Image 1: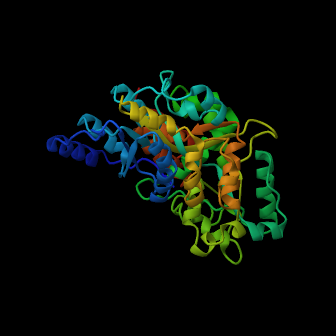
Image 2: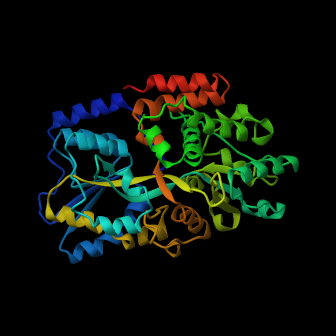
Image 3: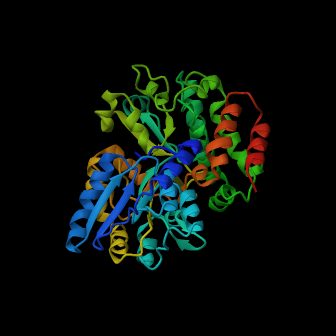
Length: 428
């Protein structure tokens, strides 16, 4: 699932670092020249699938791969680097952590390790950029998740004769059509414990990339464009248009900030649906009611948030795990190159939530219609943009952005107040 996001626990991380350094843990890089260690926090079924896909290739090369599932890899890897105990390879879900490791001179550039020309042809545009720092590739996207998806209850949707929108204007019209028919169009919920607000940031990010384009999105994520700018306000205005009308949302606007993201969409599957659309990431199906999970292809449909204009730029927001190389060993470099072989993902695709980042992977490798449709949204997109708040400084992306969007949506602050507060939190 690689559901989310930044487990922000600086005190815990500091304590962990102290323990690691005090304990004098030996380096995790394999002592045997033909053994390669890989650390990851991906779900066990994804790990098992990747392990099964890579093992026969590595065996032919005389290499033993030792996978280790670890918790909170974003924090752990930094402490292990400080203790000279990093693995040979780690799958890291945040570009910001990759950039930090580059500053520490802990990771190796991959440009001469992998076949860049082939990757540029087989990967979705933007995926290589997600792991690129100072013009060099340091993080190779190995598994991905897709956001900006709109799920709907297939049976009720088809019975009502609703059509999938091709533009944002058509999405607005569909929303109005549902209200006129006496149906609540949307479910929405951004409550997530100490991480409350992150689903709202995903929405804003998806709207920014559609209305303002790829360059503006990347400049905004990099801090070159302020939150309180016309481009970001335009995205917020679209969110307000969709969700600040009580008739548009199950429970009304006031419910959004307190409605848990994991269960917010379940009302779609009531006998009389409480809503007809719920936008979330590809992982959300794991939160649907058990009876729905048991029959996803029959019960659930999906489409991607549409572009502003028909046949316009169709970016996709996503996340994923970036493989980073910590070792100069020949075996580690060989395995890193092996990780670029799309076919190693086939066992994981057939048995888990794994989505391959390769547009050449083929949707036929996914077991169900819903997963095929989700993969199709990604592979038919024009550009892959990594979750913006994951790439922003932690104090913003996992702090003020979450908090201030929640305050705005709850009606505790004006949009200008919220955006100005986020800008003030961005340490120059």
